[in-house]
Image (tube, rainbow, N blue to C red; front, top):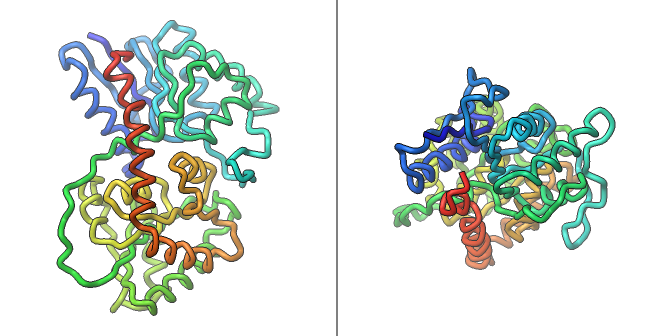
Length: 352
């Protein structure tokens, strides 16, 4: 029996990382003979540096193209283990300017104490059985790191494999915006979540005056405090609902179908929204948010959190969504169909 170790930030009830692991597991069940393969997730307690029991190491979805995880898969390569890079991405909290074509103007490769990471990364990619990265900005990170690019594809985030739920007929005449709020402990563009929250409060109050109701929800336990605070600041229980439950992603997909659009802080709330057929505005708090926006050619709907005019930009994008909902969702669907093919490749081609 072949044994695989799936690397990811899992076991902490963060909906994005958990759903990517569950999608990988489900695709293993779907495409690989259960009697021939066993897949082990890197939950707390699993020694990810002990590669002895495994035939294949999978660098899974999430922002794992960072020194610690790169070192882990480099060790696996040195031990002649098969390595798969499946929708992994690069992330950083410093805002990186981009030109009109989405090219990063700064050098992204690691330097100084992590300079050796670039060498290890090049070896890992060149010897991997499959290398699919999350988006075009993660691709540029590899290019800047001196990685041989022959094997590299933009596979998209594993979230593109989310199933579209059966469309539910809305029985409500209300117009509702779903708002995912939370915290990254100020490790965001601009470094000031309180300022972003105030912009959000001002935008939501104006949207309520335009006729919208608001539902606030978290996707991770530590986000609940921020959601509660946002709810209290709005001070309008007639038009604002607070849902503090941590829903399974399948349940959240159905819930989101009742929204006209969503405004999301955490990255995978945007994937869930689009998969549910609901346009999104992404509060782009990290490099990974920009990576997502450019991966689906919808970067106009990713709003960097350091913007001084964030309130006005949110309102502008809501107006654009009201006018262009069908074309926005069509663009996402085109991207999703393309990426699904690449994300399924390791399973269909038995590369694992």
